[in-house]
Image (cartoon, rainbow, N blue to C red; front, side):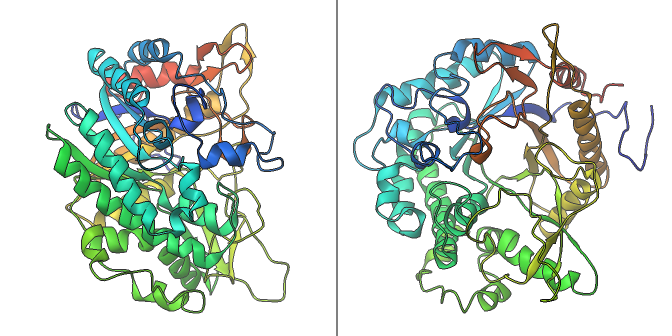
Amino acid sequence: MSSGNADYRDSGLVFPEDFVFGAATASYQIEGAWNEDGRGVSIWDTFSHTPGRISDGANGDVTDDHYHRLEEDLDLMKRLGLQAYRFSISWPRIVPTGSGEVNQAGIDFYSRLVDGLITRGITPIATLYHWDLPQPLEDKGGWVNRETAYRFEEYTRVIGAALGDRVQIWTTLNEPWCSAYLGYGSGAHAPGRTDGADALAAVHHLNLAHGLGLSALRAVVSNDPQYSVTLNLHALRGVGETGAEAVRQIDALGNRAFTGPMLHGAYPQDLLDDTASITDWGFVQEGDLEIIHQPIDVLGINYYSTNAVRIWDGVSERVSADGHKPSAGSAWPGADRVEFVQQDGPYTEMGWNIAPDGFEQLLRDVHAEFPDLPLMITENGAAFADVVTDGAVHDPERTDYLRRHLTAVHRAMEGGVDLRGYMVWSLMDNFEWAYGFSKRFGVVRVDYDTLVRTVKDSGLWYSELVRTHVIPE
């Protein structure tokens, strides 16, 4: 057993018995069956069918075909020994047009999923929104339109009543930063719009949806679940003399735009000041902050890499290495002079730096700001170019990534951070949004021609960790 290595390659570290290990997925990325059994069209259906939007021209029409292979995938989770499964619910599968008529076939699918998990001893963790907005709501303005938050509340009430006797943890939103800024600011994600003011309006209406959704759940569930939201908080590193100011600006947009109203009850003043030339924030109505600022039981944290930032000097060639697919607009309205500096490797296939120390520091920082709020790692993982050899997938880079980041989790816990669980991203290879099928994150390989699932070496390693609660040698 080693301890305290600077490279975070410890082994033999023991996690508490009640620490929960699981895996995560998202509906559009794995389900397929995009136009079956009454499902409506989502913004990602529209986006992925638009030429030039997806790197490899792929779409989510079939992807892993999880919708038709539910029992097989549940059995796979059981074989891996997962203690929890974080999945997302497809809004257009439940309310096909975004409001009004409910699709019972969609409810039945998720009911079978939840029952199948419980039967196999796996805790269901349900995310209400992982980016697949019904297209008819986008046609009315999407998240820029305040009414979308109220349609979310209605949808939440429907699915909350249907599954609210069995789901153990409810998550309102997954990474609203991506939904708002990549969807409406940079255009890299669906719906592909590029307007900074729209992105900031979307930030607020997503926050409002979070609050309305929590209230809706609390009104209809019949068990005693935990309530959560998942944020991809940015782990920031300042570069040079201007680094601190660059960190402040990106922290305001990327982190405090959500933690401010959700957890403190107000938007940070510097965020409002930084964006004053873009919007007057008039979309924030009286009473909104009270709706948004509700107690949650656990905060979900997604972490993949760090960002290094500084203020552009206006002379040298502009640098942009924020880790997202290049696009027509900006994901950072009001921070136009911030440069994202390329960091030292090694990197994953996404071009993201591997920095377990940044992970530990982020967890410590969040705990310092919110010491009474338990945390859960709801996504962490890596894409690598896997090779199949004699039917096996030897992926030592992914195993090493997981070892190092789980070591960071353990060190954070030893430092007093209240961490309750870890969900690896992802259970299986899937449709990686704007990158299509060109990036593989799974601990299970999916052959997209045959749809055969193969547990990778990293999946076998993770299964051993789940079984023993000890980081394997």
